[in-house]
Length: 388
Image (cartoon, rainbow, N blue to C red; front, side):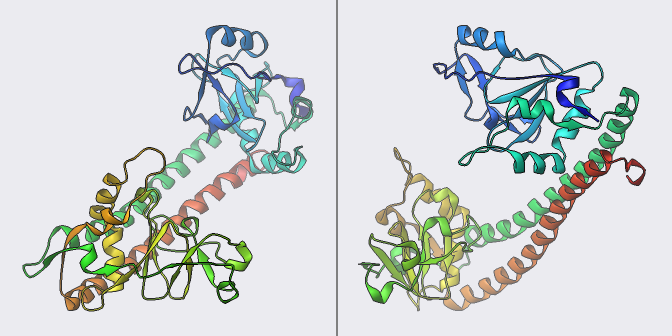
């Protein structure tokens, strides 16, 4: 056993706040390290002078390891290309001659190391580990030849796991697309007797804003946009008006309605409930006309790509994308008879049940493969390579 400080030069990036600009040299922070890669999404840029100043303290070279010190601690990245960036809130491991960079990366990626660091990290609002802590952190250090043998075994095992995971992810995507394709087909291939309608001909909004502070509403469940899962039609983290301490006006809804979130229509937050409650003023509680459209058909209509594309076009505005009532009710579509709607819904429900089963199977398989990776790393650094 050695400490990391005995086999590495451990440094960190700048603590300064340089002036940011629209272009220049990227400043990589802990937030830009994800899944063993540098992610340039929302990266900030600095001038050449600031870049040179930071590099006097923490110049990054090929073979170095970057490590997130703040927030989501970990996510080690081995530098494989000539770097053109500076670092901030990132630990920099310059590996010595007794240690292979990829061996250290795998070790720092192992779940037992991450768990230990998270437990021992400082800070309340945001966890962090310091340079002193990282330098004193222990690492099992076999000779370089054995490190390379361990790496060869890990690379082979991870390649097999990644292939299996990619196949499971593709199967998961295929299962989702199967249902989406059928749903799209329903609204793109109208029957001969389908009638063209506008949305205001088949549903309406009858609810008025009420004061949730009144006693009669205090125990009703409240649904906001954040409670509706995108594209799923399911609800999470529900609380009553009393628990949320609501003060602004809300809509009443019941089990006959379809709730449509008008904010960011590309998120496709739509749900039909089996209970009465309150919903945010940013949600439209739509009442289907009984002789025109069923609740389930209206739900699937609003969930279709055809409607979503229409909603997005009408919400393109500065600030928060939002669908106004006029644009919503002006939506035109072809509507089958009530009886045919029921037949279509039976097929959709049956297909939905099957695809959800497949989604559950492949989602669990992906989770199991991730756990397998953790188990492989655990065995690799505890002398159990013979079990791999």
